[in-house]
Image (cartoon, rainbow, N blue to C red):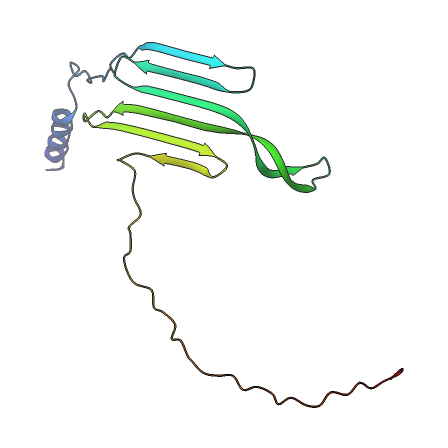
Length: 156
């Protein structure tokens, strides 16, 4: 009975094994080419660059150097606050997901931080409620009685 069980197990494994004619299906991503591209660097530190792909993807970005208030450190690590040169950046991207959904993302980055905008980005909920107001008490403060004033001390 043991021999019969072993033969049945070997036959079951052989039936479950893939045949030698099995070939996995390979996924090949579609070829995407750049259909337009621009890159301009200026002597004042500003720049503009963009590209567009054959799949409809686009990206435009610009940067400008600007004087702004910020923190600098000297060679000893001492911190000072004052005028510094920094970059401001603006741009946009457009792409289509594999499911066919269209996305547009725009952004600005400056001394106030990074500010992205897009319909696909999550939005914090807005709470609409009235804040409680502290009660107002109307009363008169007591006034100290006026006492006679007399100069005293040296020289008087």
